[in-house]
Amino acid sequence: MIIEVLVKNMVCNRCIKVIKNELLEAGVAVTKVELGRVVYKSKNIACDSKKLEKVLDENGFELLEGDDKILIEKVKLSLIRFLENLPLQKSGTLSSYLSKETETDYSRLSRIFSYTEKITVEKYFIKLKIEKVKELIQSKQYNFTQISQLLDYSNVNHLSKQFKAETGMSLTKYKTLNQNFINSLDQIL
Image (cartoon, rainbow, N blue to C red):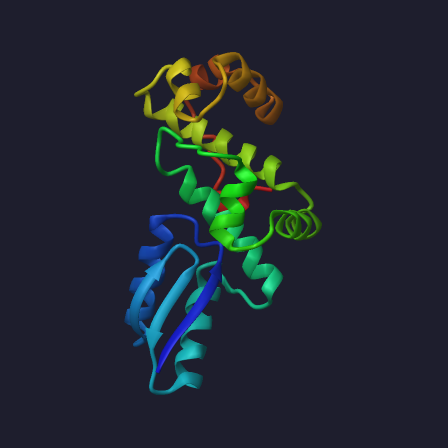
């Protein structure tokens, strides 16, 4: 039997690798692991489910159960995936993008997200973008203007103001500190 489960806090390729390797080591017949999702074959569902839950728990992940939790994770993963492909290619609004990705009316998903996470979808997306800015600054491949263009800011001043509002420091100060202050994506809220 093919089993598909949704997993909370899987936000990067390293998460995928860890879960896949540990499930295979535990004897679970994994067929696919991607952000927020594990698919496996099982002849003994009870046994494999216990193995899965143990691996997830030991690595700081959890099974998603309930429509609202699943929807919230879909929103988060959609936004994380969106930021992987630079420069950002926004055709339309963030709300229309998320509605399409989650197959859910934006007003519903926005209401559920805000109520559950205590932050709006838009503010969450800004926080993700700021983490991406930090990553790009540390890569030393781009100047501030290029970073603002890659992340679809109207101009570098807009990026600078948003960065300072979120981090409490200027872009230049962050760059000169030359330290890794990037937050893990599963800890953003």
